[in-house]
Image (cartoon, rainbow, N blue to C red):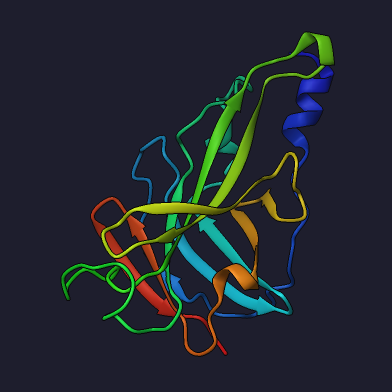
Length: 197
């Protein structure tokens, strides 16, 4: 593998926020159990001025989910979905049953990875790009994209380092004025928590 590729793999994003001893708002207690896909084990969230910061903690180093042992980038092994019930009212937003914690959410934050091939003309090696997108949700589940960023073009908004991926969302897209409920969804399992004031 060329030295440049090794440097690319070694580079990690910078932390976007100082989390200190803050407790997670959601704990899933999932583990990969031998799966190649990374599992979200904790979600931290905090308001910072005009932004909402969200930190997804995984059960392994993020780099292990983005690249194969030989350094080849892969897609689909790191993803997360976080629903936001910005008014903490389950009778508004996404329609659903009382048992479904996603009921009442107005927003969905999606985290994923795209494998980008090498571009010899631009002298770029193949790499894995972490993406984040925020969608508004209609009661019937239809989505409209409000915001999208990735760690290659927007490292100030999406950063992957260690076992974490951090996302900085503009608060005006979140639009919560009072208590705000967050819901982590992994396959058919969900967990919720509240954004600290």
